[in-house]
Image (cartoon, rainbow, N blue to C red; front, side):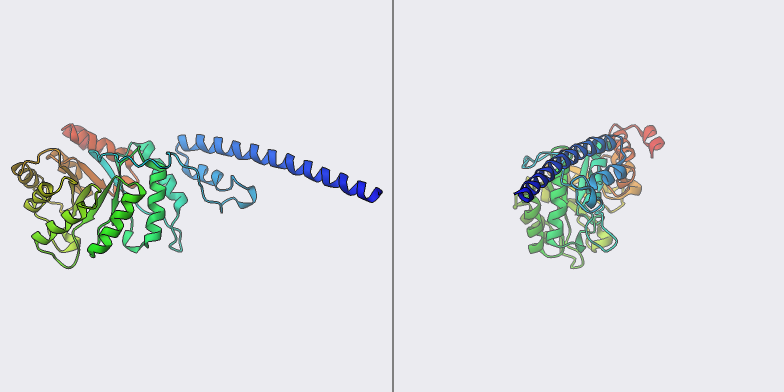
Length: 318
């Protein structure tokens, strides 16, 4: 009998000890979350990430992915694309090539805090052509969780195969993205009528479309008259990313659009960082910028000054 009593007492002590340990762990976890939130507000992303890595269990620090989100899940209302600085976001990866979703969350929060006007994810800069559909889904889900409703999400869905473009565009739409960036099919050099047909078919899917013209990489140039025809043919075709580097193209595009009844409502983004400020001063609406990955606030301020026509301020900031 004495042996049973001693065993019961030991068991009770063990249960009490486990409860006390659980309370202490919960308290520690809450303190970590509060401190990491403060660090994020101060812009100390690396420190906040290190703190959050192990908040579920101190023994797994650096191994447990962040699950917290800065925006509500299930928010499917589309946010209209805006003028200004849209970042052509890089896709963080580990040295072995796996996605680094933890760093992606920190990068997205950086852009929210820096005033970035738009997010272009899974574009050329994001190395989207190297990602599987499953990896694309993971990246898009994180983007929607972090910035949906705060920054318009423009997903790169263009490629050479129209069937694959449709698949990627439907995925982006289903996951809650606000628009699709679709490049002219590369290498095959379609005629202008083929390009117009391609873009109109993709716009039929239902997601607003930004056309992407980068002839130096694709081998085909989308002419201003074709851009205007696309805008006339489908209301979901709402803008163009022009990466020709030809500043005179702004006037050509505006002229063709106005002749077709589409003026300033059609968004014209520069896709060439070296000339983006001048592009906007000449009548463009903003940029889709690689440099914004590391100079987000500066690019936003440059674009705002250019949109206001303040050339002197643009020169000082640029």
